[in-house]
Image (cartoon, rainbow over the protein chains, first blue to last red):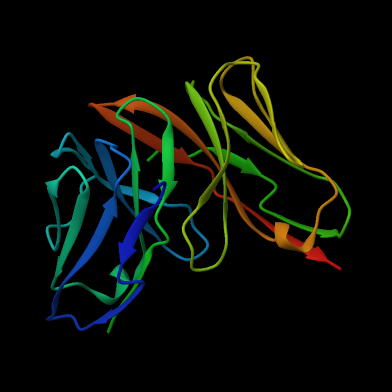
Amino acid sequence: DTEVTQTPKHLVMGMTNKKSLKCEQHMGHRAMYWYKQKAKKPPELMFVYSYEKLSINESVPSRFSPECPNSSLLNLHLHALQPEDSALYLCASSQVLGVWAFFGQGTRLTVV
Amino acid sequence: GQQLNQSPQSMFIQEGEDVSMNCTSSSIFNTWLWYKQDPGEGPVLLIALYKAGELTSNGRLTAQFGITRKDSFLNISASIPSDVGIYFCAGRRAIQGAQKLVFGQGTRLTINP
């Protein structure tokens, strides 16, 4: 298995909703990442987990809350989002200092 | 945050033509990566470069890691319609027990049949 799987593929949520994005990989990678990508822009790093511990938070607002329950799973909990948070959210995984893995296919999030 | 200078921003070519794009940085990276992204999908890794001066091919794609470790180029030969998409370069560095990618702004490739 050489894939990073993200669910759901599409999500529409209201500004008062709570939702979660999920990411899963079974490549034995111990580093996992959340990126945010706006239209026609490159991906921007949000969070990095290394060995299931939060390693990097790129000054992301607290309405985004990451969680890494085990070495294969990464969640992004969403609460009280704003319309400007609408974007493609990408998960990725890698060996901690080794070969870079594939990105997931992303979750297209729309906040209404 | 830091970004790489990727050029050109867009290209409009005829099918069968060769394509060249490049990235430059003011700082050194220990790895350069080239990705292709289709609309609504995640980036797909095309080529990874690990050593300064390295020249690597993947089918019709060829990429090189600059000697100074501050630049890289990607060439696509004999373009075909499925090459359409956005190409991103990324420099990688180790940071705080993981890896950080710094992306270029992307090159949007359009092919006229």
